Every structure is written in structure tokens, then in C-alpha cells.
Image (tube, rainbow, N blue to C red; front, side, top):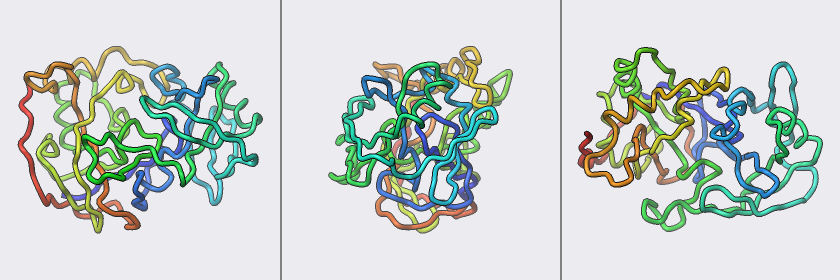
Length: 277
């Protein structure tokens, strides 16, 4: 098995970047979801409410973040010019973030057609992972939904696409890591893995939402698929909440290692696979 894709998403819910290499940090890959858009009440915004966010491209360009939309580019410094801070809300977390200046916020507000602000998660902010799934007591995460890394097997997507009338690309699921060479849904049974020189705990399946139905190149909701088909075979038996599972959330054991596309993936520990309907 080998790592066939590495993806980072600098601004939560905007277009991601496929990269050849990336550095492991405790809260996720370097630059992954370190920025986020919030509304006037400092609550996080995603494609769930504003599908157009999928069409805003991102790039890491030297010492700045670059965003673009329909030929309109904006260069954003890694750190805001002012020392303005706010406590922002993401799911059940409320954490301290740095707020960018109005000129940058207006650029995003015009595209989303709602007032919003860009915020940065500073290094000193610690947004803790759910303690029930944490590998260590101090595990923390970026502005990702809940965990530092998301992995999906390429064969798992192929299995899903064999059930769909119209195939969907991997970017519908926004993984950090894509693994090739495994059986479909083999990742359901992984507990601890090595990717290159990095070791990861496979802590929780990823529950999927309506974002998977948004075409990432157009920002348009594309009916009920693939969520409808996933619901037919990816809800665990006996599940009370009826969550649709696809992909696995990971926590790194350490930090500082660089990963590259083509790195070997090795299973170090396994666990029983859930039974699906």
C-alpha cells in the first residue's frame, strides 16, 4: 500500500490543494485549515450554508496565502496586520483566533453575499480533540471538523462509484490522505498505521454530511448522491444515530516528519470492523 494523494485545505471549506509533500504537525498537516470564515456572531461558515465556498481557490505562495475566484485574486499575509482577536465558534468549540482587516473581509463577503470575516488560528490556541477518541490527553486540532487528519482508501471510492450511476471524484470527501493498494474499506479495520516515517492512530470513522453532494468545481448541490447510495450500505448495524460512515479520522503520534506521495503505508495494529446493513 502507498500514499497516492496528499491534500491540504488552508481555509476551512474552500478549495483544497493537492501537494507532493507535507509536514506533520500535531493539529494537522502544515497549513491545513489554519484559516476559517466566520459570520458576524463569530460562528464558522462552511459549504453547508454557502456552497459557493467550494469555488474559491487557495494557494500557499511564499510567505502569504493566495485566494482567487473568477479571475479575482487576493494576497493575504500569514499574520493579520492588526492584533485584533475574537473568540470564534466551531461546532462545540469556542477558541481564540486572530481577525483580518476589513479590506480582506470585504473580498470574501462579496463572494458569499453575506458579511463574514477571515480568522487565523494562532499557534498558542489549543482546540482539543474529543477526549473519548483522543490518543493522548493533549491532542488538539485545527479548524477541521473534529480531527487532525482524514484518510480514505482509493478502492473504497471505487467501490462506491461502482454503485452510482454517475461517478464522483475523491474531492467530494476532502481527505488529507488517499491510500492505494488496499481492499475496499480495509481502513475500517485499521487501528494504528505508519505512513512513511509518521505513525498515526486511526481513532474514529468519519460521518458524512450534505457537503458530499456539492460539486466541488461549480459549488452547486448535485441532488442526493453520493449520500443516498452511501446510506444504503455504510450505516453500521444497530446504530441509533444512523450516521453514514466513509473514511477514517487520524491523530498523529508525533510531529515534524515530512510525508511524500508514494510513501509506503503499513498497518501496525488492527481492530474489529463494524458490521454494516
